[in-house]
Image (cartoon, rainbow, N blue to C red; front, top):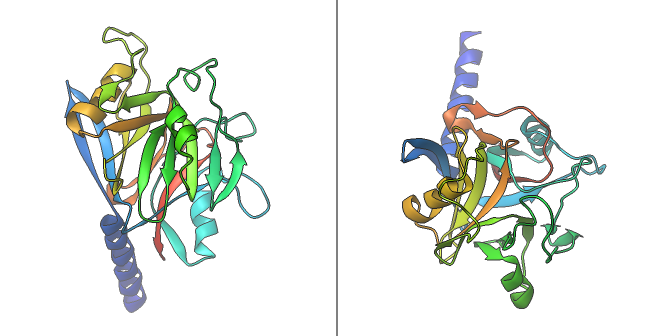
Length: 247
Protein backbone atom coordinates (compact mmCIF):
# COMPACT_ATOMS: atom_id res chain seq x y z
CA UNK A 1 0.00 0.00 0.00
CA UNK A 2 2.78 2.43 0.92
CA UNK A 3 4.61 1.67 -2.32
CA UNK A 4 1.43 2.33 -4.28
CA UNK A 5 0.89 5.65 -2.53
CA UNK A 6 4.51 6.60 -3.19
CA UNK A 7 4.05 5.91 -6.91
CA UNK A 8 0.86 7.99 -7.02
CA UNK A 9 2.61 10.85 -5.24
CA UNK A 10 5.56 10.64 -7.62
CA UNK A 11 3.25 10.72 -10.65
CA UNK A 12 1.38 13.72 -9.24
CA UNK A 13 4.67 15.55 -8.67
CA UNK A 14 5.79 14.72 -12.22
CA UNK A 15 2.51 15.99 -13.69
CA UNK A 16 2.76 19.22 -11.68
CA UNK A 17 6.35 19.70 -12.87
CA UNK A 18 5.24 19.25 -16.49
CA UNK A 19 2.50 21.84 -16.05
CA UNK A 20 4.92 24.27 -14.43
CA UNK A 21 7.31 23.90 -17.39
CA UNK A 22 4.53 24.44 -19.91
CA UNK A 23 3.12 27.64 -18.40
CA UNK A 24 4.40 30.04 -15.76
CA UNK A 25 1.84 31.90 -13.65
CA UNK A 26 2.48 34.74 -11.23
CA UNK A 27 0.81 37.72 -9.57
CA UNK A 28 1.19 41.24 -10.93
CA UNK A 29 -0.02 44.42 -9.24
CA UNK A 30 -0.94 47.79 -10.74
CA UNK A 31 -2.36 50.62 -8.63
CA UNK A 32 -3.21 48.19 -5.79
CA UNK A 33 -5.18 45.95 -8.21
CA UNK A 34 -3.94 42.35 -8.33
CA UNK A 35 -3.92 40.10 -11.38
CA UNK A 36 -2.96 36.50 -12.10
CA UNK A 37 -0.79 36.38 -15.21
CA UNK A 38 0.14 33.20 -17.11
CA UNK A 39 2.79 33.22 -19.83
CA UNK A 40 3.05 30.68 -22.64
CA UNK A 41 6.02 30.07 -24.95
CA UNK A 42 3.96 29.36 -28.04
CA UNK A 43 6.81 27.82 -30.03
CA UNK A 44 7.54 25.30 -27.27
CA UNK A 45 4.03 24.46 -26.02
CA UNK A 46 0.76 23.10 -27.44
CA UNK A 47 -1.52 26.17 -27.29
CA UNK A 48 -4.92 25.67 -28.92
CA UNK A 49 -8.67 26.18 -28.72
CA UNK A 50 -11.43 23.78 -27.74
CA UNK A 51 -15.21 24.11 -28.13
CA UNK A 52 -17.02 20.77 -28.48
CA UNK A 53 -16.40 17.06 -28.07
CA UNK A 54 -16.66 14.62 -31.03
CA UNK A 55 -20.44 14.39 -30.51
CA UNK A 56 -20.79 18.16 -30.89
CA UNK A 57 -21.55 18.85 -27.21
CA UNK A 58 -19.74 21.89 -25.77
CA UNK A 59 -17.13 21.01 -23.16
CA UNK A 60 -18.38 23.85 -20.97
CA UNK A 61 -15.90 23.42 -18.11
CA UNK A 62 -12.28 22.49 -17.47
CA UNK A 63 -12.93 19.12 -15.83
CA UNK A 64 -14.97 17.84 -18.78
CA UNK A 65 -12.26 18.94 -21.20
CA UNK A 66 -9.53 17.30 -19.10
CA UNK A 67 -11.43 13.99 -19.03
CA UNK A 68 -11.72 14.15 -22.82
CA UNK A 69 -7.99 14.79 -23.16
CA UNK A 70 -7.24 11.77 -20.97
CA UNK A 71 -8.50 9.53 -23.75
CA UNK A 72 -5.84 11.01 -26.03
CA UNK A 73 -3.05 10.71 -23.47
CA UNK A 74 -3.01 14.47 -22.82
CA UNK A 75 -3.72 16.66 -19.79
CA UNK A 76 -4.48 20.32 -19.18
CA UNK A 77 -1.55 22.43 -18.06
CA UNK A 78 -3.42 25.75 -18.38
CA UNK A 79 -6.85 26.86 -19.58
CA UNK A 80 -9.04 29.97 -19.73
CA UNK A 81 -12.36 30.96 -21.26
CA UNK A 82 -11.62 32.31 -24.73
CA UNK A 83 -14.27 34.62 -26.07
CA UNK A 84 -17.93 35.53 -25.92
CA UNK A 85 -20.67 33.07 -26.75
CA UNK A 86 -24.43 32.70 -27.18
CA UNK A 87 -26.77 30.87 -24.79
CA UNK A 88 -26.05 27.60 -26.61
CA UNK A 89 -22.31 28.38 -26.08
CA UNK A 90 -21.68 28.88 -29.80
CA UNK A 91 -19.08 31.63 -30.48
CA UNK A 92 -20.40 35.14 -31.09
CA UNK A 93 -17.59 35.97 -33.51
CA UNK A 94 -14.96 34.30 -35.67
CA UNK A 95 -13.91 30.87 -34.48
CA UNK A 96 -11.50 28.40 -36.07
CA UNK A 97 -10.32 25.11 -34.59
CA UNK A 98 -7.70 22.81 -36.14
CA UNK A 99 -7.94 24.79 -39.36
CA UNK A 100 -11.73 24.46 -39.66
CA UNK A 101 -13.81 27.63 -39.61
CA UNK A 102 -16.87 27.28 -37.39
CA UNK A 103 -17.94 30.94 -37.30
CA UNK A 104 -17.15 33.73 -39.74
CA UNK A 105 -15.55 37.08 -38.88
CA UNK A 106 -17.97 39.73 -37.60
CA UNK A 107 -16.57 43.11 -38.81
CA UNK A 108 -19.33 45.54 -37.86
CA UNK A 109 -20.12 47.39 -34.64
CA UNK A 110 -22.87 46.05 -32.42
CA UNK A 111 -24.26 45.95 -28.91
CA UNK A 112 -22.25 44.97 -25.85
CA UNK A 113 -18.53 44.71 -25.32
CA UNK A 114 -17.99 42.52 -28.38
CA UNK A 115 -19.29 45.26 -30.70
CA UNK A 116 -17.28 48.06 -29.08
CA UNK A 117 -14.95 48.55 -32.05
CA UNK A 118 -12.12 48.06 -32.55
CA UNK A 119 -12.35 44.44 -31.50
CA UNK A 120 -9.91 41.72 -32.45
CA UNK A 121 -8.91 38.12 -33.04
CA UNK A 122 -6.44 35.82 -31.30
CA UNK A 123 -4.73 33.90 -34.11
CA UNK A 124 -2.68 30.80 -33.19
CA UNK A 125 -0.34 28.95 -35.53
CA UNK A 126 1.99 26.06 -34.64
CA UNK A 127 4.77 28.40 -33.51
CA UNK A 128 3.23 31.85 -33.03
CA UNK A 129 0.23 33.63 -31.52
CA UNK A 130 -0.94 37.11 -32.47
CA UNK A 131 -3.68 39.41 -31.29
CA UNK A 132 -4.83 41.22 -34.44
CA UNK A 133 -7.40 44.02 -34.74
CA UNK A 134 -10.33 42.73 -36.82
CA UNK A 135 -9.98 45.11 -39.78
CA UNK A 136 -6.26 44.32 -40.01
CA UNK A 137 -7.10 40.62 -39.81
CA UNK A 138 -9.52 40.91 -42.75
CA UNK A 139 -6.94 42.80 -44.80
CA UNK A 140 -4.15 40.33 -44.02
CA UNK A 141 -6.14 37.06 -43.91
CA UNK A 142 -3.49 35.21 -41.85
CA UNK A 143 -3.40 31.41 -41.90
CA UNK A 144 -4.53 30.59 -38.35
CA UNK A 145 -4.68 27.04 -37.09
CA UNK A 146 -6.92 28.27 -34.26
CA UNK A 147 -8.67 31.65 -33.96
CA UNK A 148 -11.20 33.31 -31.67
CA UNK A 149 -12.75 36.76 -32.01
CA UNK A 150 -13.70 38.89 -29.03
CA UNK A 151 -13.87 42.51 -28.03
CA UNK A 152 -13.04 45.13 -27.36
CA UNK A 153 -9.32 45.32 -28.05
CA UNK A 154 -7.51 46.42 -24.91
CA UNK A 155 -4.27 47.64 -26.52
CA UNK A 156 -3.84 48.45 -30.21
CA UNK A 157 -0.25 48.98 -31.41
CA UNK A 158 0.78 50.24 -27.98
CA UNK A 159 -2.25 52.49 -27.42
CA UNK A 160 -5.25 51.93 -25.17
CA UNK A 161 -8.67 51.48 -26.75
CA UNK A 162 -9.93 55.04 -27.44
CA UNK A 163 -13.29 54.46 -25.69
CA UNK A 164 -11.81 53.51 -22.29
CA UNK A 165 -12.36 56.11 -19.56
CA UNK A 166 -9.94 56.54 -16.63
CA UNK A 167 -12.84 57.49 -14.33
CA UNK A 168 -15.19 54.67 -15.36
CA UNK A 169 -17.23 53.08 -12.57
CA UNK A 170 -17.99 49.84 -14.48
CA UNK A 171 -16.04 47.15 -12.64
CA UNK A 172 -16.00 43.40 -13.23
CA UNK A 173 -13.58 40.52 -12.91
CA UNK A 174 -12.09 40.48 -16.41
CA UNK A 175 -9.74 38.28 -18.42
CA UNK A 176 -7.79 38.82 -21.61
CA UNK A 177 -4.74 37.95 -23.69
CA UNK A 178 -1.82 39.86 -25.14
CA UNK A 179 0.95 38.77 -27.48
CA UNK A 180 4.56 39.85 -27.93
CA UNK A 181 5.68 41.62 -31.09
CA UNK A 182 7.43 38.48 -32.39
CA UNK A 183 4.45 36.27 -31.57
CA UNK A 184 6.43 33.83 -29.44
CA UNK A 185 4.75 34.78 -26.15
CA UNK A 186 1.05 34.69 -25.37
CA UNK A 187 0.26 36.27 -22.00
CA UNK A 188 -3.09 35.59 -20.35
CA UNK A 189 -4.37 37.63 -17.41
CA UNK A 190 -7.37 37.56 -15.09
CA UNK A 191 -8.10 40.16 -12.45
CA UNK A 192 -8.31 38.98 -8.84
CA UNK A 193 -11.10 41.49 -8.22
CA UNK A 194 -13.38 43.85 -10.17
CA UNK A 195 -11.52 46.30 -12.43
CA UNK A 196 -12.40 48.80 -15.16
CA UNK A 197 -11.46 48.37 -18.81
CA UNK A 198 -8.97 51.21 -18.46
CA UNK A 199 -7.23 49.57 -15.49
CA UNK A 200 -7.15 46.18 -17.17
CA UNK A 201 -5.77 47.55 -20.43
CA UNK A 202 -3.02 49.41 -18.60
CA UNK A 203 -1.84 46.11 -17.12
CA UNK A 204 -1.07 44.83 -20.62
CA UNK A 205 0.48 48.08 -21.85
CA UNK A 206 2.34 49.41 -18.82
CA UNK A 207 3.25 46.29 -16.82
CA UNK A 208 3.36 43.43 -19.31
CA UNK A 209 4.48 45.80 -22.11
CA UNK A 210 2.64 44.00 -24.90
CA UNK A 211 1.81 45.90 -28.10
CA UNK A 212 -1.58 44.27 -28.65
CA UNK A 213 -4.08 42.78 -26.22
CA UNK A 214 -7.66 41.54 -26.43
CA UNK A 215 -10.47 41.38 -23.89
CA UNK A 216 -11.87 37.85 -23.66
CA UNK A 217 -14.76 38.29 -21.21
CA UNK A 218 -15.88 39.69 -17.90
CA UNK A 219 -17.79 38.36 -14.91
CA UNK A 220 -17.75 34.81 -16.39
CA UNK A 221 -13.93 34.78 -16.44
CA UNK A 222 -12.38 31.44 -15.45
CA UNK A 223 -8.83 30.10 -15.00
CA UNK A 224 -7.32 26.63 -14.75
CA UNK A 225 -3.76 26.79 -13.40
CA UNK A 226 -2.68 23.61 -11.54
CA UNK A 227 0.61 25.12 -10.37
CA UNK A 228 -1.51 27.60 -8.40
CA UNK A 229 -4.00 24.95 -7.30
CA UNK A 230 -6.66 26.81 -9.26
CA UNK A 231 -9.60 25.29 -11.13
CA UNK A 232 -12.37 27.90 -11.36
CA UNK A 233 -15.95 26.64 -11.50
CA UNK A 234 -19.15 28.51 -12.21
CA UNK A 235 -21.08 29.49 -15.32
CA UNK A 236 -20.49 27.09 -18.21
CA UNK A 237 -18.16 28.36 -20.93
CA UNK A 238 -18.08 28.44 -24.71
CA UNK A 239 -14.62 28.53 -26.36
CA UNK A 240 -11.68 27.49 -24.17
CA UNK A 241 -8.00 28.25 -24.84
CA UNK A 242 -5.61 25.74 -23.33
CA UNK A 243 -2.10 24.36 -23.12
CA UNK A 244 -1.97 20.57 -23.08
CA UNK A 245 0.88 18.24 -22.12
CA UNK A 246 1.43 14.47 -22.27
CA UNK A 247 -0.45 12.82 -19.41
